[in-house]
Image (cartoon, rainbow, N blue to C red; front, side):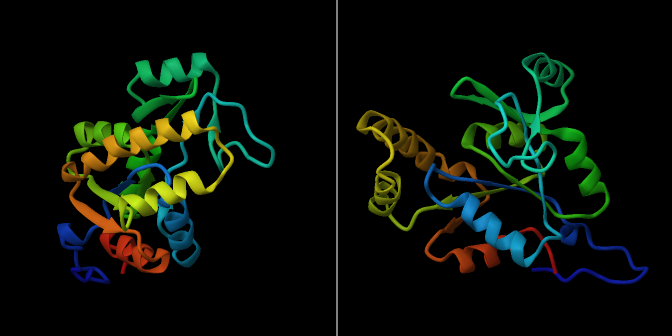
Amino acid sequence: MAATTRGTSPVPPDARPRLTVLSGPSGVGKSTVVAHMRKEHPEVWLSVSATTRRPRPGEQHGVHYFFVSDEEMDKLIANGELLEWAEFAGNRYGTPRTAVLERLEAGEPVLLEIDLQGARQVRESMPEAQLVFLAPPSWEELVRRLTGRGTEPPDVIERRLDAAKVELAAEPEFDQTLVNTSVEDVARELLALTNVV
C-alpha cells in the first residue's frame, strides 16, 4: 500500500481514501467483519442507509438507519439523492449520496456494506469506487452458516441458498476478493484496501 505524505505535501492521488464497497452473499459475515474493523479503526466512516422499514427496539434514527416514509424515499430516488437503493421484504433501503461525497472530499475513508444489486449501482454512478467481494472459505461453509441458525423454515433457507449461488457467480465483477477464513485477518486486509495508514 502506498504511504500517504504528511504535512503540507499533497497526498498522491492513489493514496487518498476512496469509496470502498463491501459485498458478498448472505451469511458470509460482512457485518461481523465491518464491526470488528470499526471497533479497531473508528476513523473508517460506515455510511448510514435510509430505509422505509420501521425501527426495531434500540435502533436510533441517524445512527443505525435514517428512517423515512415511503413519500420521502420516493423523493430521494426521484431527485438522484441516493447512490444506490434496493427493495427487500417490502421495504426500501438506500445510501444517501451527499454524506458519502462530503466525507470523501474531507479525505476520510468511506465504507459501504451493501448487497450485489447496490454494488452494481455504485459501479455505474461512481466507477472510481473500489468493489470488494467477501467470499466464504467454501460453499459447504456458507451452507452451514445459512442453515445453522435453525430459525428459518426450509423454503426460506432454499431461497437464501439460491440467492447465494447468484451472488457468488458475480465475484468476477469485483476489483478484489477477500476470503473470510478469519474475521481479524479479513478486517485487516479490508482496512489496507481503504488506504488508512
